Structures are given as structure tokens and as C-alpha cells.
Length: 575
Image (cartoon, helix red, strand yellow):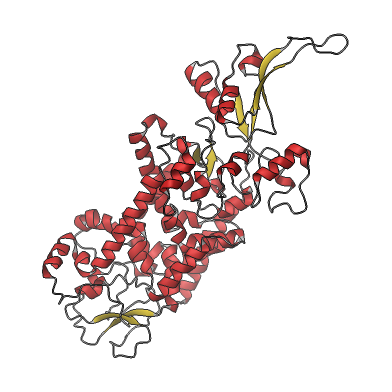
């Protein structure tokens, strides 16, 4: 069995070889890999820029569904670290684990091929090296083999933190890193160019932290090609561990002339000093075989009995020396223990308004990988990433910002693209029944209550959205001696109907836009959406429509209430 996808030096396609050589030596040696890499990178960009662009119709959910022929979160669910760490942290089955298992099964036959063929971050690193670092630095002779085991330590720290209920994979997993960077950079540019720069939300500390992290990650290429992939990437470490069970591998025949061309072209540090293979590093890119002048390199079954060059060094890439063990324990203790301690110590005095369909907060923080995909598909930037104002534990998680905009009734995009189920995928009727908060009128500043005019902005906006959750009624009237209210006394003012309000924030958005920004009658909106116990519905499973109907009837939850819909997440009058 031979798995050859490279172009040998003796190939008859000499004209094609010259054309490919113009693109680069690895295009000539392994065109199949470069073509598939290009397809995957273009696909990732199309998903992000086109499919996840919510504009084009006021029926946001239907418009997005029509474009999403392939799941927009495909690359996120293909990253096994995201699914595995999420399942460990939440202690539950995550649907994306099926994709993770499928990818790992493929990598038994094509070891670590995800890194060489599919990963858009790896392809971007190759492009950066071809366009910049490879031209600025003509030679990079220094290697950092002493860091070879670091990615395993990072992986262990991520899994250890997940076991303690804290999600760190979103900070370091390959696909989450590039998706979040695309959101904060390319997403903002797209919004500014296509819709207007005034619609781009202001940047917070979370934006800058992510952008700086990504810039440092890319800049590591100045030290060594694919430095991140070789030494730091925990997703790559997952595939390297899978390589222990590989069914095929790179082998070198005895006619090898030790010219060193294979070592020069390898981006993953998989070629040892005797030109045999570091098996846990090899990504099956096959560029080495394409540049071999004597065609001594083959990719064949692991237990192939033909004669190949004997290995003069230990083949294991993970060296369990005393120094490495101590370094690993220290890295895991600091990498997992410090974030866990910070997250457990952090307390949030103010509840955050989350997207519709968000599971209970504890489970949400264990499931959310901070990829930002939900923010990208949200029209009008209702969802924005949290910075450090709520502590490290909530960094980059999505929050509803009614001061900026309101949650559109025709949109359910955020749940459709969530790769882990932190935001449930709801159909539109369920989404429209899911309470994310409760609108509250500030009677001290509201214009009708304060006697400064008859303002109906919140009422009209709520009625236009179809919720009819705010009524304009007479309040504060005087009573006669017999206790009966005096007709036409008091003022006409907005009153929120708690059994109808879902906390969409459209009322707050309208009050802010007109009374604060336009007419300058107020310093801040006189109606605002608040979250917290008794004001929101956060359930792991079950129907929001049924939950709303029971609330309106004044019924208490049944014994078969879906998990997560207990007293902590129900209004006070139902407890």
C-alpha cells in the first residue's frame, strides 16, 4: 500500500513542473497538498466573509439558511481539541465530537494531515513565510528543538483546566484563534467598507489582546517556519498523539544519498539527522518526497516489511527525561492552575445579557470556545465580545448590547453557527419566545414619568417587532375620597408587560438613538434590559414556548422539567 500524492523528480510533466516551480518549490514537489490547502483556505474565507455576512434581506434567519449549504462552522467542528475539551469541561456529549472522531480516523491513515492540508491557520503561516519571512530572512539555520515538547504541555494544561470546568481551548486552538482574529480585523473592515464605519463597534481590551496574540503567533515565523505548528499548537499535539496509532508512515529507502533537500523543504521538523522520520511530527505533506533526487522516500503502510533505511536515533518525539517531566508538570500546573484560580475567584456582580438560546451561565462558560462566530452572523452588531470588564472568565464571550442595537425577531443565526451548543440552535418561533432579559423603565428619567413630554418610542418599536410587550397607559392617578381613581388623572406612560417581554432590547436601542443621540434630551436610555434570575430563560433542552405558556398560566414547572430550567432560572412567582 502506497499513499503517494507528490510529483516525483522523474515526472514526465516537465512543463507543468516548471509552472508549479514558479509558485514555489513545494508547489512543484507536492501540488496535491497545495491545491487542497488553497481550496480549504478559500472555503474558510467564503464561509466567514460571505455565508456569515447577515445582510441582504430583512428576514435574517431565512437569508442565512439559504446561503448555508455547508455548515458555516465546519472548520471549527473539525478541530478535535475544541470538541474534546468542551465535552470534558461540560461533562456532557457534544454533537461536534462526531466530526472530531471522523477527522482523527482519517488521520490514522494520513497522519497529522489536517495540519498540512486543511488547517487555514497553517496555510496562512505558509503564505506569510512565502511572502514575507522567506524573503526577509534568506536563511534560518537556528532551530528550537528544545521546545519540541511544549505543545504537549499546552495540550495537557488545556485538558487539565477543562477537567476543572474552565475552557482554555478557545484561547489556543488553531481554528478558534484564526476565526476570532478574522472577526476583529477582517470583520470590522468588511463592516466599515460595505455598511459604513460608523457601524463598527468600538474596540475594547479583548479586541486588542486577541489581535496582539495573533500578530505574535504570525511573527514567530521569523524564528522558524511554522514555529507555532512545530512547538506550541495544542491542536497539532492532538494529531501528534494520534500518530502513535498511525497505520501508515514516511519511510526512507537505503539508496538515500543524504543530500539534505528533504530536511530543507520540511516545515514541520519531521526529518531527523539521518533523514529518517520523527513520526509524531510528520504531517504527510509529502514535499520531501517530491524534492528527493533519487526517489528514496515513500509513504506506505507502517508494518511494510520491505527494506528501508535503518533508524539510528530513537524515533519517539516525546522524550520523558527528568528535565522534560519536571518542565511538563510545571507548565501544566501554571497553565491550568492559574487560569482556573483566576476564573474561580472572579465574581460578576452584574449579570450579562446573553444571546437567545444560551444555556445556563455555568454550562455556557464551559461550552463557549470564544470563537466569535455568533458575533459575525449577528446583524447590526447586537452581539459584541466582552473585554476584561467582567473578568478573565468572560473574555471574548458574546453579550447583547441594546444601547447599540436590538435583537431582530427574524434572526436566529447565532445558534445555527455555534460549534458546541453553548447557544442552542432554535427555530424562529422558539427563538422569539426565549427570554434573554427584562426591559425596565427608569421612572426618574423617562420623559412621560418625569413630565417632560409624551414619548412613545419604546411602545411603537415593541409593537412593530410584534412583541406588544409595552403598553402606554395612565399611571400615578389621584384617588377620590372613596378610593376610586379619578378619571384622566395621572400621566400616560409606558409600562412593561413581564409575561410578554423577551428582552430583545429594541426599545432601549430606539430610546438611546432618539432621546440620547439625536435630540439630547437624556444622558442615557430611560429603558434598559436587565438579566439575572427571574428575568431570563436559560435551559439546556426543552421548549421556550412551553415554558412561556406555563409562566402565563401561573403553573409551576413539572417534575419532568428539562435540565437547567429549575428554580435558578425561573421567575420568582413560579418558584
